Image (tube, rainbow, N blue to C red; front, side, top):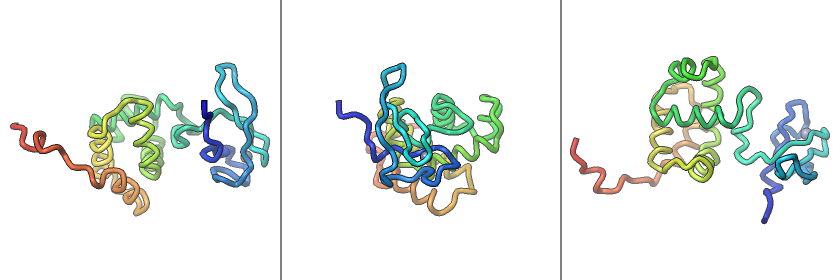
Length: 163
Ligand SMILES: [Zn+2]
């Protein structure tokens, strides 16, 4: 096994001077957890943590599962209020998660396709819904989401499919 990419790991301790910084050389491999997953350690603050695959899926408030569920709900065109109701998570939290997702659109798309099994079409629907429903997206977020959906064209047979 090639192991987790060291350079992809970031320290998620907010009080750490190297919080979320990449390639600063402060992250080292440090043993394994009970499940046998590679663990890492931030040399700066001493925090030990598991592999941060899709960094955006590690959140202070929500589990990876919950964030994946939010993505799935977005694919099905559930707005922030609907997600708030379904998951009983405050809309501000949902909203900040969506912003976070958009900011890391490429990483999120890869993760959802590879690890969750969503299709490219579903991913595109998710981003276009996010863009439509979320006017607060800043330019960087829009650029990110455009990057991952740009160049995607619907196969001609689907364009013509009758209604
Ligand atoms: Zn740290």
